[in-house]
Image (cartoon, rainbow, N blue to C red; front, side):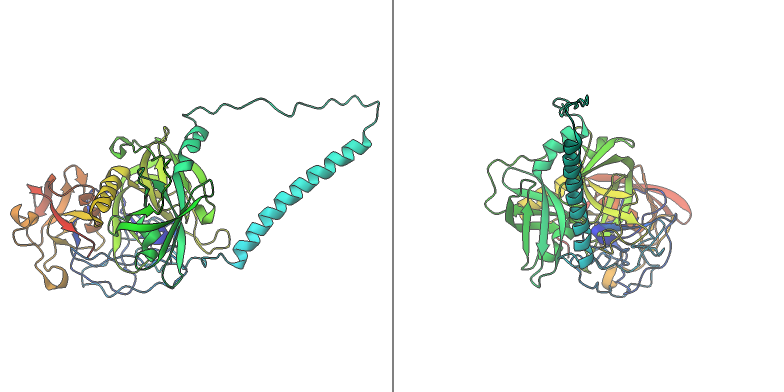
Length: 488
């Protein structure tokens, strides 16, 4: 499905949460126009929560290039992607709508987020909130003064106690989890060399000062930009981007002069998550740092495509879906279970309308998506170790056209290359151009993007069972996943 990163747009997801993605989209290049074609089942357009909204543009078809929606991380006008191949366009339409509102599907243009410094409207909202608080305090003071002046010696009024005693918040309550997790969650500000940027969230990964977040949160700062992280106690640290993975939409930054008392959040097991489990999300929606929201796991293995807003490659994930309120600025923040363990990284939302705090960005409609922590942990560790992401692949190009029948291996690879890498995993497994992959292990595959996302939940060297159709007959084969280093 396509979604918008909290800050960038994302493509919609297919009707049934299909399993895995392939290592490479079909051999196509960006079309430079929205991808037509609706997903098997309509739904609202999702978006990255930090940089702006709008559905993601059509990714190219091919193993090494991804189509990604144009985002507006820092108020910059999105650049249209290049033309795509003759293959039917992808990604599929968003759940219900396209990006910010208009019911378009994949390929809807991205909405430019509000300027980094907030606009006059944003300041007005803040001013109104402050005014309301001041007025409330003033009214209370006047009320107390009037009551005191009207009081007489004969009054029988008895004042109620001003304190009901200390309130105990057990560790298992939402308040208890929030109190423990907030000190290890940061608000990230990323700025490009030209001064453009945005705000996102991250969380402490280890005691050395590594912070995990989304790639689209720090994308603007990768080449000569600036990154900073602010803790709830107000302490702010400059940071550096250690590594970033566009395909996974995961990045790691490291604090300069990190404090010695950092407390990494406990990582859970996203494979053990069940639909209906309680969730707690922490982030900075619309710049409101240290915001806590709650919900449940609405679905698992939801195929989602998202963008980092830089107009290059798209991200694919087999996501955890939650109805916890997630908005622009939540991207990169932790999605916790009821015990406070991190089970995912909030990355994208699906939305059908614009607006919210005068920013022109769409807001939560209860469809949020998080990268499962088991996958994010592996990616983060690779980035810390080498600075580069490692992707699992099958060594074949699949069509990115919207489809519910499976992922079809194209007749031609990206840039005129072979559709099946000679001597690669798919070749050794006996797969050929024209084969339609319908399952990866027990995961149903309904499209190329779904196959890519599912493959990336695995590691290079993993053995998987591929179910495919050839000449109308169903067949199966065993395949050992290969590897590709880097995003290029």
